[in-house]
Image 1 (cartoon, rainbow, N blue to C red):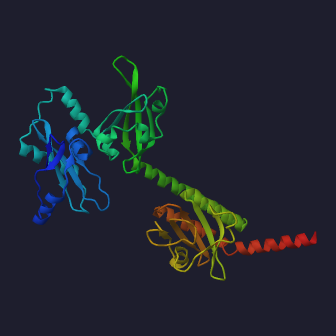
Image 2 (image 1 turned 90 degrees about the horizontal axis):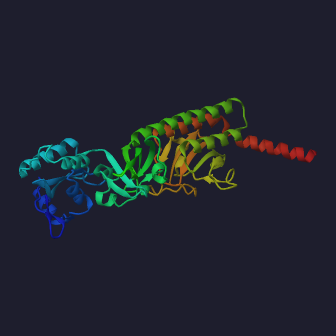
Image 3 (image 1 turned 135 degrees about the vertical axis):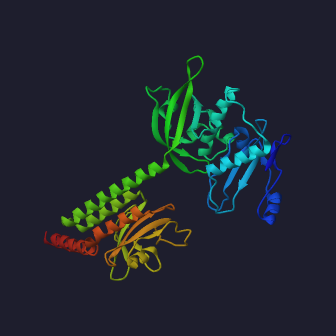
Length: 404
C-alpha cells in the first residue's frame, strides 16, 4: 500500500504484506516511490480507476486499486503476483476494491446527489475507449480506457495528437469535411511500446455550445482478433488458389522453368515475405537456386544454399517444414541471404527445397507451413527436370545458330 505525500506529490510505501517474510522485507526495501501525478500510480489517483496491468514475458502481473477516503484518493493499493503468474481478473479487481472500501469505511453517495460526479464516474469506470480532439487533431479529452488501450498512463496519452496513434486518420479529422453519417472504419492503433492493434473507429463531429464544430469525438474498439481471423482466411484462400494454379500448369505440361517461377511468385504474394526460392539438389550435393523472388540479378542458376547443418539441409530429409523465427537468436546463418527468419520445405524425396525468407524475425503459422508444403508437392515433378530442360533448350539454340 502507498500513501500520497502531498508535499512531494509522490506515492510512498506505507505498508507491505507477503506470504514469505523474507520477500516482504525485500519489497519494503527495494520498491521505489512512485509519482502521484504521473505514470500508472498517478493514473489511478487521478481517474479513481483500478488498472490491471498487461503482462509481458518475464514481468509480474500487477493490479492497482485507488485507496479512497471521503471520496478522494489518498493512496494506491498494489497487488503483485510472482513472475509467470496469471493476470488479475475483473472479479479479483472487484473483490480488492470491496476489501479496500470495507477497511477504509468508504461509502458512495446517492446517485442523484451530484450528477456531475456520476457523469465523471461513468466516464472513468467505463470500458469504452473515447478520444475527443480539436480541429487540428490535438487531444481535448479521452477516457482512461482509451489510454489503457494504448498502454499509456493518462498523463502521457493526453499529450498525444491523434495522428501519432491512429493510422490512417478518419477523413473528418485529417481534413475539414463533415461527413453525412458517422465515419466508421478499421484502422491501426499504435501502442506505447510501438506495437500495433487493429481497431474499429466511429468518428462524429463535436459541436460546441454555439453550434459550431470544434473537433471530433472517436470511439475505438479493439478488433485485432477479428482482423487476424480475416487475414488467416485470406491466406487460406490465396494459398489454395496458388497451389491450384501451379498444379494446373504442371498437368498442362507447361515449361518447368515457368512453373517454378510462378510457384516462387505465388509463395511471395501469399506470405508477404522478402524472398522466396526454389533450390534444386545437384549431383555434387549442392542446392542451386532455380527460381525465386527478391534475389539479386543473376542469382538464379548461380546462388547456392548451404546444406551441412543448415535449415535447408535439414529440410531435405526432415519430412516436414523447418521453421526458424530468428536466425540471430539461434546463431544460424542462411548462406549469405541476409534473412533473419525463414521456412524451408523439402521437395519430393530429396530433389530440392522451397524456401520462404524474410529480413525480420517472423512467425510462420501452421496454415502458412501447410501452404508451402502443398506448393512443394505441386512443383515436385518440375524439380530435376528444370535444369535438364534448360540445358536441352540451350543445345537446340546452339544447333539452330550453327545451322543458320
